[in-house]
Image 1: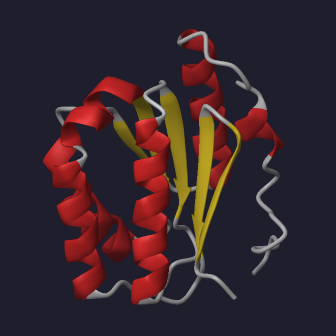
Image 2: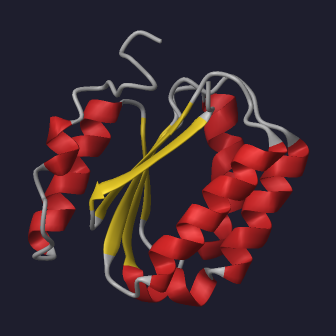
Length: 151
């Protein structure tokens, strides 16, 4: 089963869910390629990242994410309206925030303990910005085909 799921079917809302186990190198590269495709659209978007089930991260992957954050800094500043980050594990939240601090002053990154909190905030921001599909985050219900609730 894939450990990173990206759903942009309701763009400009983009939903990313990480599984329990660390992703493979290939999955991380595929995820970063998908993020590059989204940024090449050159349209405002919001990103809700659910890493609430993630149990561990790999140092090599943290470096890959950090390199991508540096690479995409300008595009992110221009088009990424919000990153809503769900991480229930405090240690992992710290590790992920360490990667994301590189753009903390460039884009809005907000951390949440639950998907429900992040979904409400994401929908609010989308409405405030006049973005389409503002109710999409509220339809998540905490589950997806690849990552059922309670996984």
